[in-house]
Amino acid sequence: MSRRAGTFAAARARKRPAFVAYITVGDPSLAATLEVVAALERAGVDIVELGVPFSDPVIDGPIIQLASGRALRAGTTLAKTFDLVTELRRTTEMPLVLYSYLNPIMRFGVEAAAKRAAAVGIDGMLTVDMPAGAAPEITRAYRANGLDPILLITPTTSAPRRAAIAEQGGGFLYLVALRGVTGVQAASADTATAMVADVRTVTDLPIAVGVGIRTPEQVAAIGQAADAVVVGSALVAVVGEHGGKPGLTQEVERAAAALVGALPTRG
Image 1 (cartoon, rainbow, N blue to C red):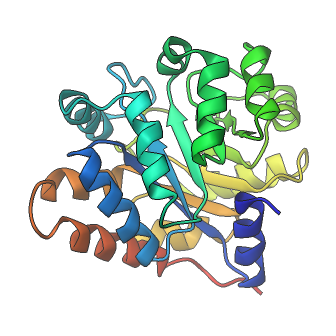
Image 2 (image 1 turned 30 degrees about the horizontal axis):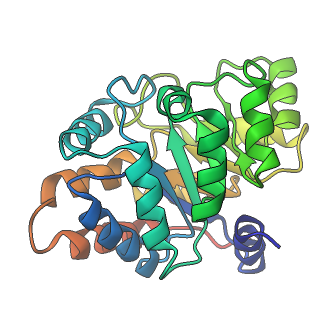
């Protein structure tokens, strides 16, 4: 059983959703990212999305945009992200998803990136600005190297398109809970629940819901329907506020633990 499959199975056995945390790699430094991931794991986070910093992150709002800028100025690259994962795998078996825009993958080389990601211990690839079906050779490269091609479904995705995305995706499906960018608006639990119910009719893959989730109350409400809840900007904001300070990891662990602790138990 893969790390990802084992994590979702363990969450089901505990009768609760999994918790997925996004962080921007290299903010404020690569060394700090190692410590932040460890803090997230101590807090009970199940899966970490490692965000590769990019100069034009079109789906991401101001909080992650600023984090990407800090990380890029610190010299973070996709190659250094792969090196970081090698270090992480010395101490953790937690599933790791590479969250990247297409440009860094293309510049590195699709096949080379897929091979390197698999070699260092990445479990899934979430290429956020790659429309499903638009670049089948990329999805094939991911699958050929044992990587889950994680795809996005948004509120504006049509019903036929949702079914096609569900068929092409792997690992889990990522439902974007609202229109717009990350970290600006608050997701509606009612809207997210309706989306989950609709997508469940076309897939057996686990369904993760993210974007616009930042409070324990939202985690509790959306976690009633989703197989996983994803929080990014709220945690990136903590890193942005405390980065470079002695208490960074404690603040990250505290914030993550409060969110993980809100996951609902389902009968």
